[in-house]
Amino acid sequence: MPATSHPRPRRGRRTYRLLAAAAGLATAGALAAALPTSASAGEETTSHQPGRYQDVQLLSFNDLHGNLEPPAGSSGRVTELQPDGTTKTVDAGGVEYLATHLRQAREGHPYSITAAGGDMVGASPLLSGLFHDEPAIEALNRLDLDVTSVGNHEFDEGAKELARLQNGGCHPTDGCYGEREFEGADFPYLAANVLDEKTGKPVLKPYWVWQKKGVRIGFIGVTLEATPDVVSAEGVKGLTFKDEVETIDKYAKVLQKQGVKSIVALVHEGGFPASGAYNYDCDSPGAGDGVSGPIVEIAKKVTPQVDALVTGHTHNAYVCTVPDPAGKPRTVTSASSFGRLYTDTTLTYDRRTGDIARTAVASANHVVTRDVPKAPDLTGLIDRWNTLAAPIGNRPVGYISGDIGNSGTESPLGDLIADAQLAYGRELDPETDLALMNSGGIRAPLTYASKGGEGDGVVTYAEVFAVQPFANTVNLQDITGAQLVQILKEQVSGVNEAAPRILQISSGLTYTLDLTKTGADRVVTDSIRLNGQAVDPSATYRVASNSFLAGGGDGFPTLGQGTNDRVGAEDLTALEKYLAAHSSPGDPIEPPAADRITIVR
Image (tube, rainbow, N blue to C red):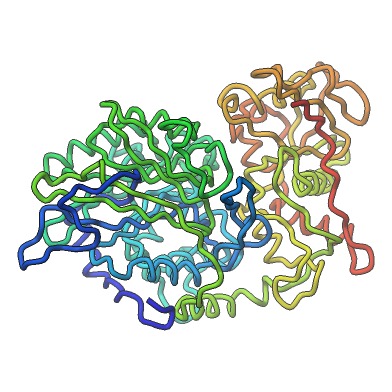
């Protein structure tokens, strides 16, 4: 439908609670194959009696992270594979456009479900993050989201805050924003594998069932079992995270006993496709060969009773076929991140068996292009929250001479942030030697082009907030030289061996990363230098890092063993102070060269 037409009426709180009480599940999968001969796409029946097969549209997305406005820089583009084998980038994202695309996609599909794979909130830009992601939840309500799994970032502010996002109410510290009391999510958050340590029960609903005119589809929602490794300890305090496969299988049996045979798993864990193009044919080399990573092992093990998996977490785009334990093909999808894509999957429901006809599953990712009209109701929502955020967000904090990106093994922005934390660390303690920054904590680039009316090259508070939205503190601790070497090796070994997490390092620290080797050997020990000198294994070094890393997060347990801790201000404050001290309108900061790590491939 056109953007000027009215969206589906919003479910009231009473209606949602009745639906939630019925129990259920949400999200979809994909497979391209022929429909059963008796199926008719989008057609219920030619008589007053329903036909045997009913096509159900499943629209899905993941990892929105509160990105209501179009994301900046590379975070707002997707790569598209062309017929001649070349690629091009396409601007994408923004909930005003996402709403229009979803509403148009639903046209002609009376049986339509919209589901998500987690991380709808958390690590959000200032427009949503400043208000504890209430704006993102309100936007998702207007997008007519039916159900989502939790992701790891839903726990950034703890289980109590997640419960408030679900149920509504004013923030316990900051209160209400404006004249309205926050109503909470109209859709259920599913957290089947997240248990309260005291009760042993899920902290939110484990599953949900969508139903219409005899068609019933269950959704089970889980987040990655390793969530405690990627979230601050305070955020997951009092919680236990169980195995994804065991949990999905458990609740699939529950649904089966209730007579629900069509099941979709919403899994906040992901994979790594062989191509970065959103329209890459994942199955071209052979079933499942086009994707690797944790989701592949999960998909291979999850009970055949589950018909499709909607996934996320890795921010990649794929529509792949992975065989289930019975050897049957099963669709696994992911729609990148930040609202740049959505997945449209057709699930053909067999009314006779109550199950999905697997040979009839079809799915594809679609770009949320910005060449469609903006949805006026989402524009109004953004304008309302921007009015509240503008006095804070529009304040200039620094100046840059060009784009400072956050992509790559070592990124220019990673170097800049590490230098900012080193400089701030030396304000706290002049003996600070180096700083380490996790690349996953850098959520957006700094772009030269003006986003609003601030002017080219001006960095606003809203822009640096989007870069570092976690409210981590800058911590100082003492480590030995031997521990420093071990920390660098933990980037590519242990839990990080399969998917390395390369730390961003401050000026003066250099080493060689040899990607032709395996495991810890990829960090060449003899190459590690600090200010040109070899690291002394027995010497003590003062290290600055954010509180997440200082606690051993992201698979760096040795960082959690530091001593003589000192806690400083927020990392965002450190970056803001650095920009103010090192840039001016006439002398902006140049993008760092990102040449501290020598990479051998």
